[in-house]
Image (cartoon, rainbow, N blue to C red):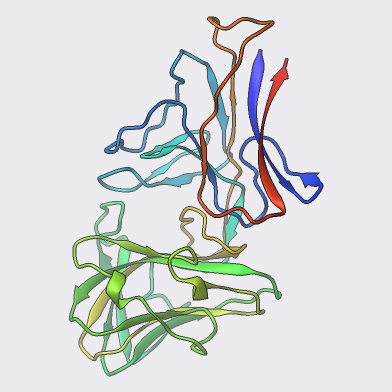
Amino acid sequence: MFRLSLLVALGAAPNNFFGPHSAGKPPYLFRLAPPAASRHCQAVAAGSFGETVTFTRASDGYCVPGSGNHSTLTTNQPRLEAQGLLVEAAATNVLLRGRDISHAAWTKTDATCTKTATGPDGVASSASTCTATAGNGTALQAIVTGAATRSSSMYLKRRTGTGAVEVTRDNAGTWTAVTSSLSSTEWFRVTPQTHAAMSSGGANPTVGIRIVTSGDAVDVDLVQDELGAFASSAIETAGTSVTRAVDVVSITKPTALSNTEGCAHACMTPLWTLPPQESVIVSFRAA
């Protein structure tokens, strides 16, 4: 039996097998079979030639399909998205009540928030609607962390109005406009990949949103803050931080392939631009 493993080398120190990439980096997608653009999240994975796929993850995992509602897959269920199998390192969301902006964990100024919106998962009252009661209404949450490169992310959707909407992760020292990205019909995820200011290295960041025009309203969901310069998949929190476990996948050699000779082709898509000190290595191991 062979195991197909994906390694990321950071300098001279490679990380673990297939999936646990450099800490704080976005995931790799491994294409087991040509994906359909409309593929929904699936809880089974099978290779193109009947390979046996072994998959483990000791937690739930958020999945974004090619179309339709997002979903949360349970322990050990692989996440097949439109581009392939999603494989991520462990990550911890330290921001509390990421779906309930009405909670006291969030400080609202000239804004009211209610947990009455339908989230990206299609579940009624799973997300929040925030409305500015005066100009520059804000909802902010302070986080206690040491100085390190971290990233914040959130899902936003326009509810009413056309005024500016802005986000911050430095206690309103910098406001970044996301207005042009918002839609009244589709959720948009703000991340460092879409807005670079959502990643920074200072200690104790304060994360939040500002609605510039009084009376405007925005739906907010799955707000997150995690270690690293890029956002990983959404991690839902309530009263405590939550860790999504690492994805680990291995694939047995198809019986049609020789045990002693042959070749293989692997297609992987990193979801960020690799810096010079990192590389992607594919390895085969005999059992």
